[in-house]
Length: 120
Length: 106
Image (cartoon, rainbow over all chains, first blue to last red; front, side, top):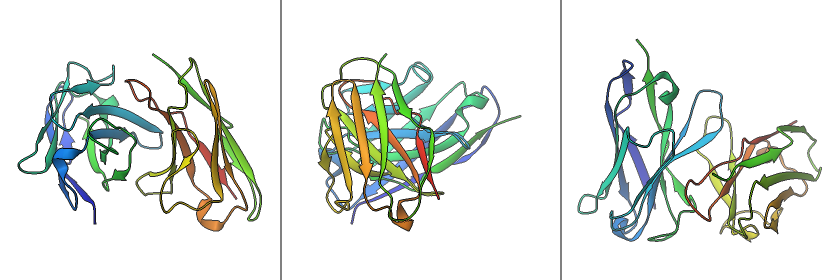
């Protein structure tokens, strides 16, 4: 059974940093692209970032480029999202999402989400 | 960047109805479109990819159509579990933009 378990949720002050993790199981992690998708309270889905199976290719939404860094450790089946210079607009539930292949980004499996709140 | 616009933003329907949701891309995206269902308080679920391909395990009451800039998601014979919010997402290039969502309400 595919499982994606996010962690790292928290309350952080504006301008602060936070690192999210997503531990994957039930599939060969190194064979799949991964993504982060977020959802602000009461709002729709926003694609945040993606990373290829190898980790060599990364992609970002304009709203987070230069502030967020996606990475992965295939030896530990873990996806990361480092978030810097956080603002209130980054307050959201962050979902870890598995793609459909190494370079295929349909969101086939989703984690339960982890909450990030940016507030003073 | 390509913008994705869904309509309507909400629709009221009854059990047994057929509902059609529209998603429009600001540029041609071929058939690179997915549809997701999100029930209240839950993570989204992939329903359709490549505009019309039904994801495994998804009811055949769901169907997708379209190509280029105009796409539809049709739900036949609405069931109680279908009352949720539906999102389209482009998949041809980054950013993988979502539409604003359509809430299907009783």
